[in-house]
Amino acid sequence: MSCPAQKTKSSKLYRLERYEECLIVYRDLIKNSQDDYDEERKTNLSAVVAALSAWEQATPEDLGLPETSYELCYNSACTLIGQGRLPEAMKKLQEAEELCRQSLSDDSDMTEEDIDAELAVIHSQMAYVMQLQGRTEDALQLYNQVIKLKPTDVGLLAVTANNIITINKDQNVFDSKKKVKLTNADGVEHKLAKKQMQAIDFNKALLAMYTNQGDQCRKLAASLQSQNPGHPRPVLIQVSQLCKEKQHSKAIELLQRFSEKHPESASEIKLTMAQLYVVQGHVTKACGILRSIEDLKHKQGMVSALVTMYSHEEDIDSAIDVFSQAIQHYQKHQPNLPAHLSLVREAANFKLKYGRKKEAISDLEQLWKQNPKDIHTLAQLISAYSLVDQEKAKSLSKYLPSADKMSFNVDVDELENSHGATYVRKKAAKVTGEILPKEQGQGDIKKKKKKKKGKLPKNCDPKATPDPERWLPMQERSYYRGRKKGKKKEQVGKGTQGATSGASGELDASKTASSPPTSPRPGTAGSSNMVPPRQQKPTASGATRKKPQQKKKKGGKGGW
Image (cartoon, rainbow, N blue to C red; front, top):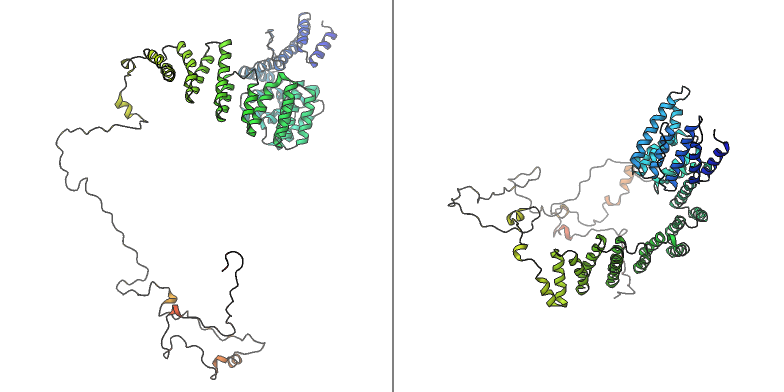
């Protein structure tokens, strides 16, 4: 029989996340106990092994635990997830799901909803594996199914909601703000490990930044930094918020202070500083920061980035210096490795590209010694020596193969007819016999285009002579008499109430005999010397005639 004190000790060690000590206690319990709780102890032991793999990246030894229950199978899957063996972990989770359904379906008191609630933990872990594999749509669908079940385990709800927030990132922030409330439930901190709680707090700070809650973001980041002084993520979150507020100088100062206090995390911080300098246009300062990272400055990717940045700034000497330091580092620690030789090759090509043939000689000689059959390198070396030592160039030219050895069996006709050939020789036409004269109507006869007849207007009589004034506007033609107005019926006068049309006729002064004629009416028999329509000026009565406006004197610039 096991002692209750040992059980209490093992559970306390597990809650304190002292997994190594907890593992020793459980192994001792399993060896020295023989009762009905043996399977439960093995399940707890497998949970400790899974925690070691997940939170401490340890690779525990295979304890040979049988996977007879879905709990043991589930813990084994969590161990595989911690080791990065995702396909195997998914198979284990599917086995755990089948075992869980079989064991719970035998119980008559368990309903389908109870079974789904028990499977929620397995489904959430399956969604996590899908998320790690990049299947975010499938993972999100499975996460939402778990949320809809509303499980009573607040720890499961918090982890599932947090994973949904990580998938949403800066998109669908309204859904993320709803899900973040599930992470604030009472008792969550007692259900989750410290690293799980840290991950949730980090995501809360990032969500506050995405939703433009600057004060809340800074508050959460400061709290995280006080809990984890040497962790770079809280500082990076504060820097991101400062950059969002376009305070780049303050962000760089914050990064500089943190890198000085915590040199063990300086690499990640200095990379961020270099990125900020590049954003501000200070490329040379960014290069200086990158070259100060001892762990990365001789890596091929870092050398490539530095050479590109110095070339952009037209600082060729500094770029060559980067190559030289990297080559010396590899020559001292890892000589003649592929990485070393590739750097030498790139340095030689870079120097030749910018006309530094004298400086490229040592690199080319080193490459040629490593591979004397490399004709391309030998040709480059001879070209470089021709500027420095012509005798040396002549002596090296003896190692070049003869023209016969360098000739290749190339079918020129096939090469010219290949897809992508830009120039093809014109071949003379082969004369096989007498050229027969072409018959009439073959080849040389060009087709004549038919001219389409113009369309005549409607109601047009082709026999009638066209109007000579048809090109003039209607109002300018000699026979234009104005628009014909329809005869209006006598209407009631628009005067005072009760006035008649007869009275209005008597009051019309134009109908009296004594009124003198005004201007001659157009078209009358007595009119003579008719003026063309374009030269006629409209007559106006004295009441409506306007006085000519006087021109205003223009002042200021441009005046007469």
